[in-house]
Image (cartoon, rainbow over all chains, first blue to last red; front, side):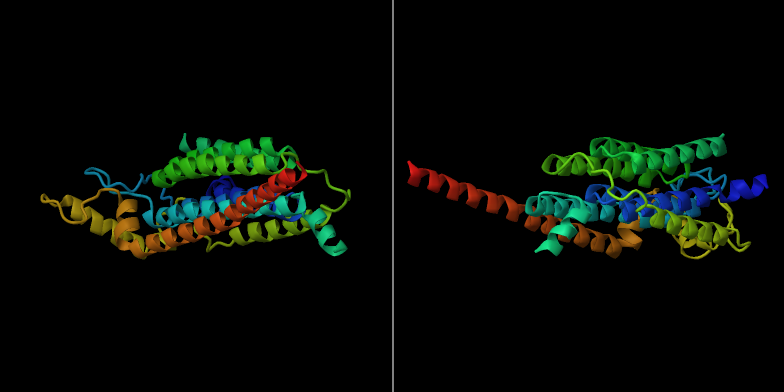
Length: 119
Length: 203
């Protein structure tokens, strides 16, 4: 039982964080908060990849003389790219939020929908 | 020791995420998301992903927080409380169902155990990169790819085109942000110009 817990704990936490992020995206009307929820979702996927790449008793993949067991460097490379792309999409989303605020005077999604329906 | 730290840090991550979901003040939410990024960077160090931890701490906790603060400056800093009391039950139910389905999927015996050296992810491409880098570093004379950090060699050499694609994505996002926000300032300038003309006409 304890073995099962230890060997799956990271996966379960990742799923829990992913679901919290998804819940924020779905249930909150505030657009900034939706973007932060999206960030939480994203980070949970990063954690999943890094957890998969971990080898027990391994070290960081930097080659030295007397170590022969390293963690998998490939997920690290993928996630390095994903983090930077994530910031690019976040900044684009925030720019859209600022423009929406200029155009509608609010950043609540349901109010914007009501205004569009009223027109 | 490492296992205990891992357990504790991941529990902190969950607590921070729950707090983010509950808070309505967007400034508090921004600060909590900075803490969240920093905590995840610590977890990355623990899981041997030091380069990822660097990037997450600099980009996730640093730049994203600054961007969020800038956006809050230009818009509201308080989220409105929800209108309908029971509106969040639907998403909650969906999330619980989906989460339990995913957890059920991890209980499959074929799911690789955390830290297992025989997992499918470790058997194909990565060992070749590692072996190649070990061979390069082991030589007495430096070779063109004489960098001990395997993540760096993979990012810049073996998978260089992926990194080029990443740069294209960032460039596109930057151009899009400049179009979106630059247009706004232009409009405001024009509006201000019109207002001052009207003021002159009145005077």
